Image 1 (spheres, rainbow, N blue to C red):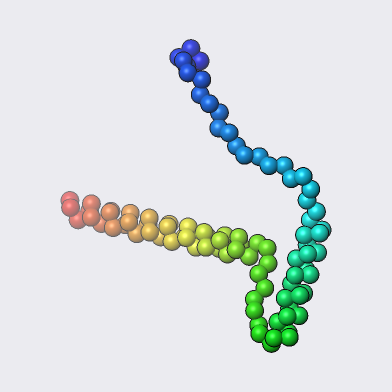
Image 2 (cartoon, rainbow, N blue to C red; image 1 turned 120 degrees about the vertical axis):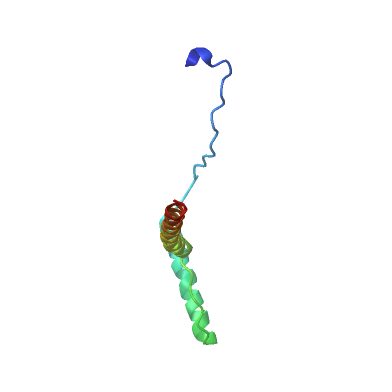
Length: 91
């Protein structure tokens, strides 16, 4: 196969970023402080506001994709049944 390859195909370049410094404990501590401050502010104003945490949207997306897959399977089954009935009717 290499005999017939006249042109060199370029390799796909991927972006890779190495973090210089990352402290998960500090991030978790700051998130907890943020939640506590928000809860204290909510208690003072007596308004219930939902607290968004890291990963909430990802978990919702996972459940949405699972339900979307089941809808797709039902749609494929429905189309195949209708197609089979049309073929049987045409004979």
